[in-house]
Image (cartoon, rainbow, N blue to C red; front, side, top):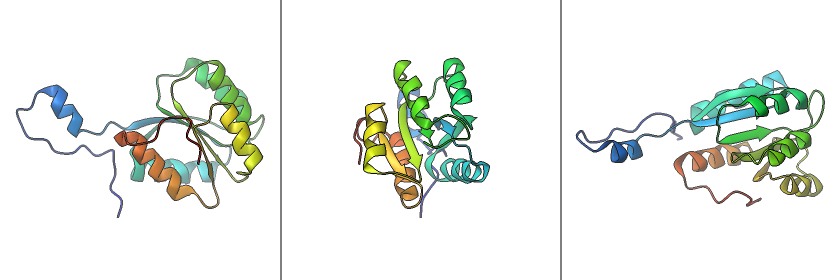
Length: 157
């Protein structure tokens, strides 16, 4: 059974604040680029409940995603679909790469072919997940980012 990483863990009273903070899990601030409202709603709800994610932004197309990135508050994770209402998730990845954003970039797509995986890696994606069969892996990856145990960015599997 999974637990929500967003719930703070109890810590002994009287600890210095820096040590006490280590007992609290900070939500993983996340920007999602997904054009399908049903998939977005399900994804956001699932990640918030199971992986300690706080969705702080959402876009349905490339233009709005790029605009959001330019005005964004700091965030740790961006989840991008490749095929969007208009434009492409590849354009969003390129904009994030050009802006040298420090956030991890994850692709969630129905077409996780070797070619797409390679193109995403070239554009700075840390991981590519297939919507049809790798949602558990995405949840696990988000949990590992939140708790600090994820592999270094750039490790595509």
